Image 1 (spheres, helix red, strand yellow):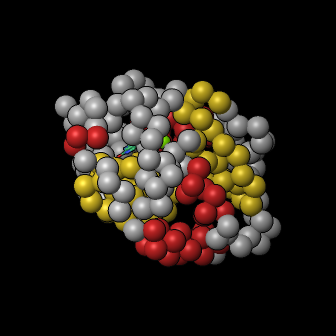
Image 2 (image 1 turned 135 degrees about the vertical axis):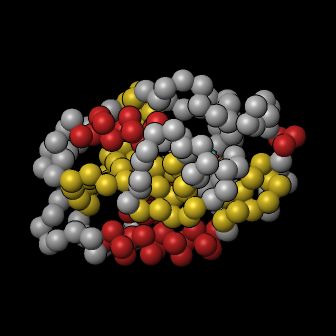
Image 3 (image 1 turned 30 degrees about the vertical axis):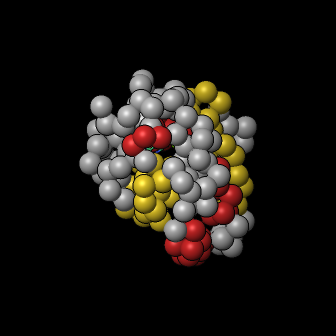
Length: 184
Ligand code: IMP
Ligand code: MG
């Protein structure tokens, strides 16, 4: 375990096994001939999307969307904004938005609203992690990796002030490593 973590919530092995299951579930959710696209919300979902797409056995394209982040804090400072939009044409395609974590729901709502304007054939949402205690917008993901308690987590793509994304596991940061402290 990394020295800055208080505890590990999801191990590297658990992530690997669950993503294999999600990939199989997604691969069997579409009919032959369906054109599937993953849209990764970066930066947080980069690692998840990279591992998930390799577990999908039907043809699939990949694009990314950049959404404004927490910056150096641990809770949302402002309404999310789309900073960099997609390059692919999603009209008529079956789209799965891939994000690292669903928390208040504002990011997912914003991304879904924008993608819907592009007239996809269908729109689903996959999140690696789901926290439910702070939901402000009703949003129900179609594919969930793990449901976790309402704690600020880092690792496997999730950051605090752009650090810890490279950790292979997901864990709770020690309070002394959070500056400013969480949940104030
Ligand atoms: P929401 O808009 O509140 O649902 O937040 C979604 C985004 O906030 C995620 O895509 C993450 O980038 C970030 N986020 C939420 N909770 C955490 C956390 O515990 N650790 C790191 N980032 C988080
Ligand atoms: Mg994110």
